[in-house]
Image 1 (cartoon, rainbow, N blue to C red):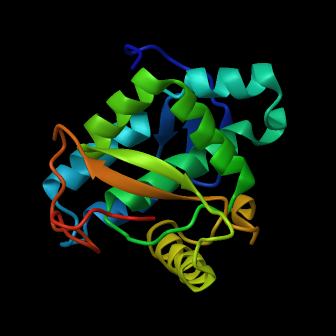
Image 2 (image 1 turned 90 degrees about the vertical axis):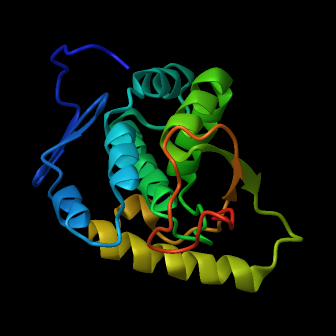
Length: 196
C-alpha cells in the first residue's frame, strides 16, 4: 500500500468518495461496524480491504482497454464490496457482473499481490471458479438471490453494474496462513470454507 499521500478523487456519489486506494466517508461501514455480529477481526480486515491500493488494477484495465474508462472506478468499488461480503462470511454469492468479474480476473493476474491480499484480508486463498454448464443452475440462482439480499442489507441498493447477467464465477476460500483470523461471522463458520 502507498504511504500517506493525497490522491485525486476518482469517483464521487452521495456520501461516498472513491480514490485509487479506497473510499472515504463510508456511512455504510459505520452502520455495519455497530452490528454485534461483526467481530473485531472482521472490522480490521474490512478496513484493510477498503484502503488496499488497487491503482495497479485500474492502470491495467485502462491500458488493456478491458473496461470503458468511465466505469473502471465504479467496478473496483463494487469489487471491494463483493470481497467485503465474502469477508463477512456470506456463503453462496454468485459473481454476475461482467465488469466486476473483470476486476477480479485482473487482480488474480498479479499473483503475488492477489495471494498477499487474500492472506491479509481473509487468512485464506480465495479461488475463482468459473460457472460452466455442469454448475447446478438452482444453486447459481439461489446464490444470485442471496447476493442481492446481502448486498442490500450491507450497502443498500445494488449498483447498476449488478444488473442481472448470467453468473460468470464463484469463489472458494481455501485456508492458508491466517493473518486476519476468520471468525464465526454473519453467515458460515471458521470450520466450513465459504463458497460464493
